[in-house]
Length: 88
Image 1: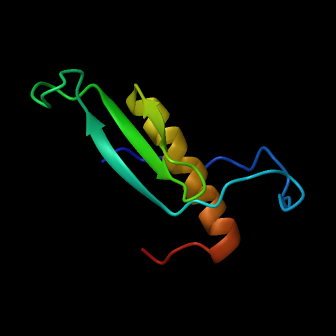
Image 2 (image 1 turned 90 degrees about the vertical axis):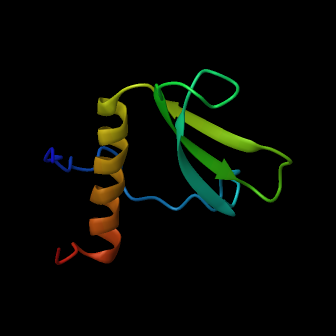
């Protein structure tokens, strides 16, 4: 398994209450294949965000392992800052 370096935060901690934002109701992570029937080789990883205030999902398509690793590392960095590092 590849080791992921957790980067330092590049943005300061901030409160976004004064900025327009959407509350996320749920999310999913899926492998994506270009063929409409779902057969074939997956070429992207999609993070799908669901918002109750809009009638559609927002999809973040990641086209490389590096993009997925950078998202994971950023999430881990902020998880550790907010909730503390996990024991595992």
